[in-house]
Length: 182
Ligand code: NI
Image 1: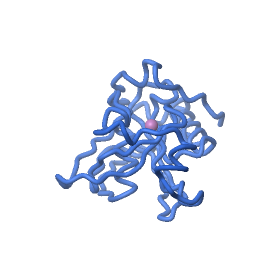
Image 2: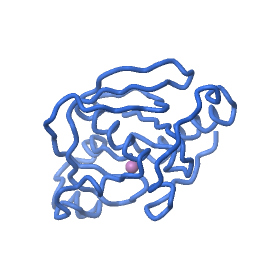
Image 3: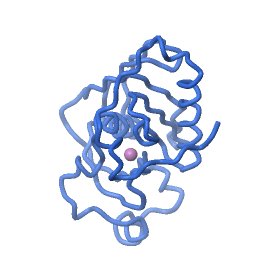
């Protein structure tokens, strides 16, 4: 499946609420092909998540996967509803494949419930925590025209990758995979 171009901030797809996918269309080759291409595109870009609007498709589909640790197996989520399971928030670093090179501290709920459909149309209903909850909220935001910059509470933590690495993150390269970039 082809790797797709990832649209960047300024492209209207990133600011347009995505449409639900009629479940009857899920089995269509063009939709299954789009999902395969999204997975390939995410892996090629070394991201941990990708939402359909990031490849210019205003549909409620996102994919995510992380090599870890902790390893997060590939998930495909269609027509999601993401609900916080706790009032508190936790801050951690995020980046976005559609906002290349920037990192910032973003508050997210540490535990969320995910409901939706998998790529075969089977219902999904599960609870995720920590890093996976962060990825899910980042990708879910993309389906609502929201990017991580909108969630930041203090732009003083916004930094280019090299400067973040040097002055803010203080992390070794293998730890960089822990940063939610979707
Ligand atoms: Ni993103």
